Image (cartoon, rainbow, N blue to C red; front, side, top):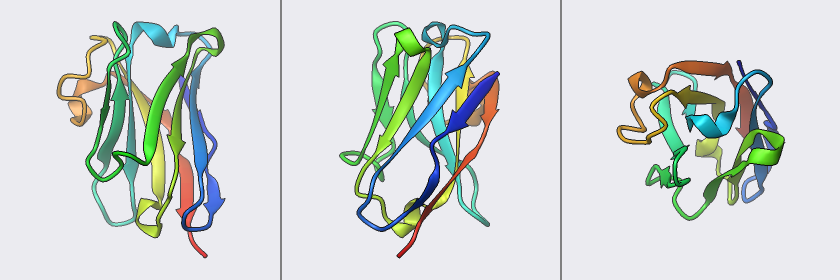
Length: 124
């Protein structure tokens, strides 16, 4: 139901913009979260945007570098990632929550459906 895209290989300090799109859902009806999972590590929450007022939430390790946003006309949620570092290397996935709220946004159980991941590799 969700399609994540935009990953790739980027040098340290570079930028990428990830997209989370849906063809049969109106994403503005849901809270949308971004998660990432690096090799050998647990999946961790990166960011969330709520459905009601578009409130945004970020993990401490991405604050000031990543920005989550919606484009309702394109039915897409974006994750703009700047100042990327090697430790940002991971598979990034988006997920949707029926509640529309980002409360407990960094918990996997807060989301009801997931998209496949897109690989982000930060390396020189």
